[in-house]
Length: 378
Image (cartoon, rainbow, N blue to C red; front, side, top):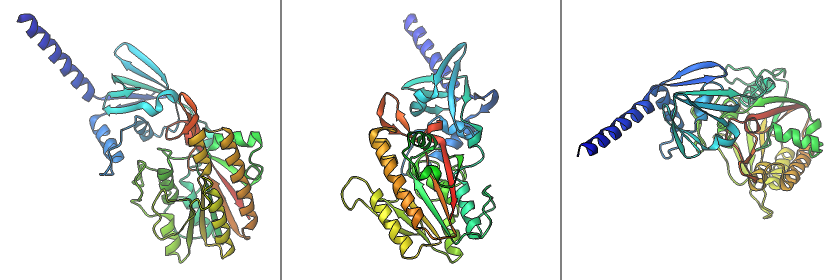
């Protein structure tokens, strides 16, 4: 009986220690800079991510890192007393969750952590620009009021009659560089000037589109997680319409985000070839020929679709990149003078760990977060 009581006491004490440890503060060192994370910090981030009452998202640990402006993670150490475990971020990014202040789940294994040591990556050339610059750039080019942010580009205010956004879904910076080296993008590689940039976290189409339209980061515009389709702040579409101008959006089969006040043209896959890009191209040509609106967004989905299905840099991906490049070249030839063309992706893509034949995105990795903005004044 005494032995049984001792066992119960030991287990109870162990449980109390685990509970106490899981709710205590967490130290996060980012490139040598230490930050103290409290239960209040955890709850605040968790509530922001799960702002959609209809869904409950797992809290990826990356949400914490992004709060401290981390764009790319290379390596993470977790310290448990005298024990240190080191992870390459690319191997665990999709499977590392924040369960409580100092409680982590990594590859289905639970850790009660005293300290996280983070080593970041990326490149300084991406820091100057962001997908959030495009709304301000558009307002400057069309000379319409929108927010207080300046784009950082040298486009004279009111110098353009039209702005064309060519949205290359999933074709991030590293994908662009590879395609250019392989000779797949003869048109894109000579159009205008390319500015390396970062997208926002999480690098998904809906969240990146929210940042594109609002000119604000996901921490500011109310769209912290995929599946949230409405901004909580004004958008550049509102500014265009309020200024007496017109915006048209040429999409694929559906819209990844809600676009109030814009004319939406859904293209679909009318010929059943498995892609909407050819129909987007035709609808864009028609919209331009019939009287180009003040602002038009042309959204090509095919590169992203090929990357997800066959993997980035696969034969199918290469063929789709070449096809989209030809379409973009023809569209630009058709555009009138005094048009600003802005080409950009929403995010990049990486091969799924353990299966390079499939692609995904959504992590603090350079191949997901690194994008570009190409500007060409016609």
